[in-house]
Every structure is written in C-alpha cells, then in structure tokens.
Length: 119
Figure (cartoon, one colour):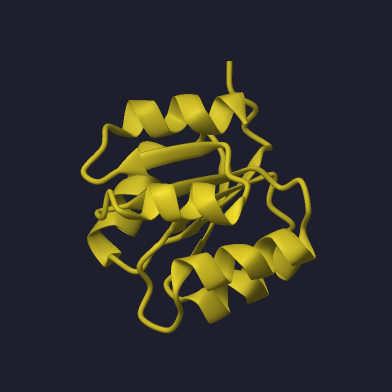
C-alpha cells in the first residue's frame, strides 16, 4: 500500500496532465506541482519531495539542464523522467544523469504510480 504521506513533486507544463495527476493521485500522495523549471527548483526546496516526476520539455529550461541542477541540489532524490520525445533517453544515458524511471508520453497513470511507489 502506498504511503499517503509520501511527498511527490510533479514538474509538468501541460495543465491537463497536471489536473490528471491531481485527480488520479488524490489521497495517495502529498503532491506539489510546478509548471516551469524555475518553479520546480523553488518547490524542490520548499516541499522537500521524496520523489520527483520531471517532464523533460519545459517552457523556460532544457530538461537535461534542470535535471543536472536537481541532482546537484538533492543528490539521491529519485527522479522519474517523462517526455513525448524518445530521443531524450539515450542522451540522459550518455551524460550519466541519474533517474529511476523513464516514461514515454502518453503513458498509463498506473505505470507512473508503480514507479513512484518503487522509488
């Protein structure tokens, strides 16, 4: 059974997807949301999440650059990468950037829940 006190930060710029996360995971996790990389970094400090779900395409920053900043600020934080672009996964591997899950949009929210619970 998932821990309802588990803090999950979703960095996602698509409003419809943020709403889907909020509805689907209501009562399952304590959630925080950010629509930009800047908001994500601020929430990272304010919320101290246990898991971060990171969209790699954001309006204000490159996802790879943001992931580097997140890893520098919170080493060991489990990050689940989401993207509509399959070409990003090899780039992350080549750069040696850590992440615990990778989901290509569109994905099933049950799959995301399983990855969050396992992180």
